[in-house]
Image (tube, rainbow, N blue to C red; front, side, top):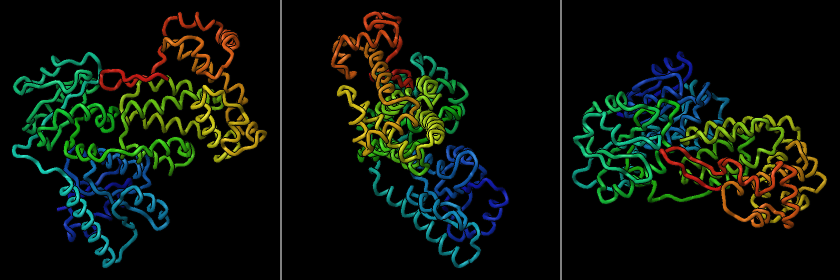
Length: 478
């Protein structure tokens, strides 16, 4: 049977669908029906589900968000969507995201429903066959195991020994840089309950890994899994429940890893205003799973340059809060809040979304070319604006003139390089786009009240991006 999970925020709709739709006739059994995406994710962590059938427009977590989460955390689960006649523009987007098919809630024609459910069942089985054929064949003695990932630098093996059966199975450390340990051959249904009750959820992520048959690659894959994949799977807001994952699926992802078009989606900056572009960006990131440190550094660098957008009054607060983010779910929520705030600021500016997005692109470009000392004329030409029109749009969007913004941006970068590097003041001056070092020294003093030399001697303020996720800090100079 195809184990199915039904999701719709309206109880009466769920009740009607359960009784009207030909589930059993096409080999489907509805394991549960729930009223929200959050509850659906809870069921998916507890039960084996083959097919998710979800409404798209729900309060809280939408069907789009739910499908994206499922694609990352439960890639073997197929998805079909529930819709109304007037929602076909949503249907097209969901199908582009990988949904198998759509079900019109008001469809009562028995023959049409039979064809539809037959088609969905066939696609679910085809998906299962494709995944089975693509997976490496397990060697004899395939097994399961449990991965314990510490969330603080002081997480230790002694804490794990609070779980009695760990001492019997000789855990080994996955990587020296991470407080994470692997225990082979879990076995027994008591593991999740025992582990969760004995280990603090704010200090440990527990992952039950299945399909560990490829013994020769296990020690190679586990450090990659800890460094990269747990970042995308764990959601600490939900209390760090025990996760279930297949190392076989991870192997498939790593063997076919590649693609950096998430960067082009990011640098379009259309996601700041357009919901469809936002969903496309999130989908690309979740499918490609770039190195967490690379991804977070790109996001942090961009936000750093947006501090100078006066209309975006929350920029400094958002920037500071980024230092506490530890998983992709954290970053995604943070980024969504950021874009909503920025979108409101853009609307208040009254320059139109297209012009505002071009200004954001311009800010990104001048930051990338900081050493060159880009002029306003060059910045305007790069986004195909006249100098006058660029000046007007820039000031209305940002809240300051281009020259004022660039001065603040250069001084901000100078501060970071002074604190975070041992570069000479002359080199920092050049990197910030100042050809005249004495002028740089004077401007820096005027803006900060300190000479560059004295500023460097101040009590250290971190100039580094820190991803404090796995009990360590992945750092990159800003």
